[in-house]
Length: 123
Image 1: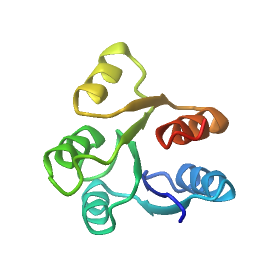
Image 2: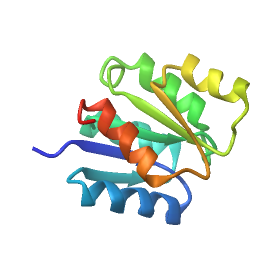
Image 3: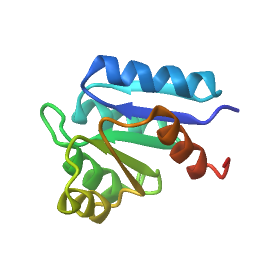
Image 4: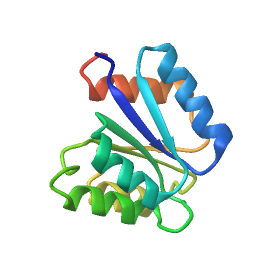
């Protein structure tokens, strides 16, 4: 059974690019462009991993991550933050909210794929 990855990213070109490379590797993907919608989808569909942009409309990624980690239904889903915010403080803030990884934009797709596979013990 394919692992499900929820991509919460408001920039369509980025989310599509991530989804395409993951699907080529056999992952099932779902894309949400808004933090609130991402929270609903995560609770309803229980993905195996969430890739979460920090800068989102309506609700920022740090808040989304905090709510995911405080919800019994989603608290155990690993989250990898993706952001143009690259300072040490930004990275620490993401990890402090419960993210298991942090990728700075622009990113190498294959490096991101490697992080995803590592979450599943695939490499």
